[in-house]
Length: 210
Image 1 (cartoon, one colour):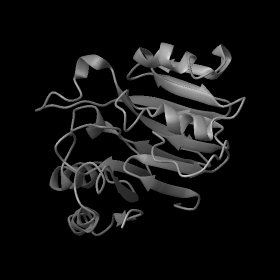
Image 2 (image 1 turned 135 degrees about the horizontal axis):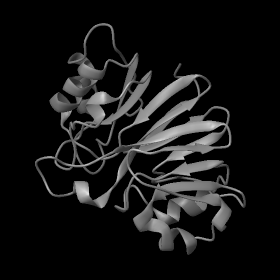
Image 3 (image 1 turned 90 degrees about the vertical axis):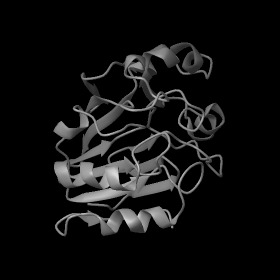
Image 4 (image 1 turned 180 degrees about the vertical axis):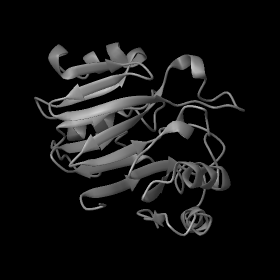
């Protein structure tokens, strides 16, 4: 179930499945130009990095992002037919890949206001459903998520911390949980192991950033 998954750093995720899919590409080391689809959760520099998008973009790459990023995406040279602007709580499709947007926001801090309509993604490919939470706290929206694999931020300050992320995962009960958003801007590399220890026994934790 985790074949073809890599967390590159921070919240930068790469899925090599039916398509080559990136979420919030950041700190990409090489000029790869291999992305079939790029998903962006919100406009903060560590999630929407124009420099890194240019390193993975192909001529026919599709980019999916919240509406407030439209002009910046156009300036990166994406053709209109390859731009999908999304709103929270909607269903979409790119080719054969179906996905839903899950609202992502803070409940007790101001970094990611609910009114910004930023998102996480619930995506199905190869008969596996992945939840990429984006920058969020525990919310009434993500408590309803049903998935096989969940990528959740654990670094605290701007998102859930280790304990809060574990509470969310133990509630929605994916088969596999993968921690993100720690060890670079916030949190330490030790947070991944702390998170794993708090999960229920039936939930496997896969740590990519060590």
